[in-house]
Length: 365
Image (tube, rainbow, N blue to C red; front, side, top):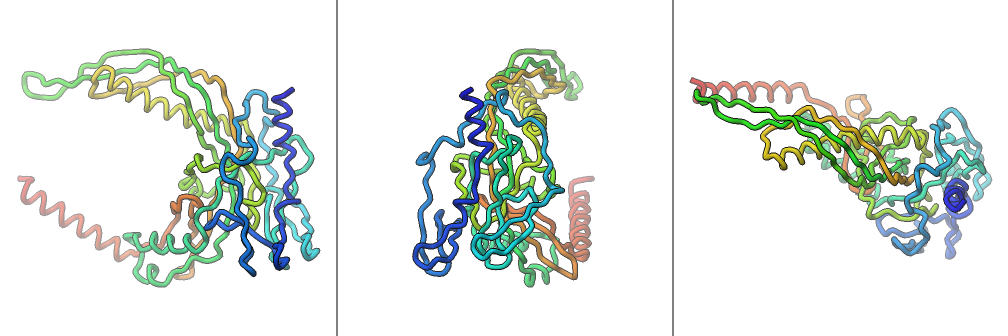
């Protein structure tokens, strides 16, 4: 019962009462400021420090996977919910996947309440924004300037538009793995003619490894490969979930369920284990090559966390075409597409061919 009660506390989290705070000085809405890790008021400068790691409850503790109630994928993308702004009374429609938003009428933050439904889980932790919108814009300019094939005009004139700060959902899984493995390793030698050949040997054994925080992007709604490319976070800076962190930002609920997330995690864990086993075999037998690594893995003490992590989403326009990109809100890492100058590509090809021709002329004969 204790484990079930623990899950209940997470599934029934309600946030709308504590994210639309008023400034005690001027009455305006205060929002979370990534630059100072505090609640701030843009009108009068009031700010309030948020709890530091370890000062709040143990909401981010690992939860036993096998006792969790939430098993299936829930895709809420087709459903909508009406939100009434508590500040001005305005009404707005939000996608069911969005748990935070901004009133289009007065700018007040509005958080979608979590339904009293066991099928809805509230996040257990938040990786806060550390990169401000202004810093994200600076990083974008630097990123674009480094694009070798981007036109000079784009590097000089393009500006990021409509930055949207959003907290995206992630599962993280921990597990103790035990793998029985088989593999082939090879040792190189020289034959009598000086040719390199390889002698192959078979081996097998047991490999154990604790997997810590295997991350899975918990959304089926967003297919943006750029998001996956920047979804690497320092979870040592994880904070216990507090709705104040997402005040002023959007937040998406998970639509990839716990079980489906674990299936994806096992696939990536298996690839990681194969690589580590290969390294172990290479080191143990002083091998030059390793191949045909096969694993049979059992997972014990599986736990998980449901977390929100920050991403800036934006785009820029060049020659009437829109280019999307994303910025990791914690690390500043960027992924996206940029315009390509055909002339720059042709020049690069010509230079490459010329260099190869010179190398062949001097060293090939």
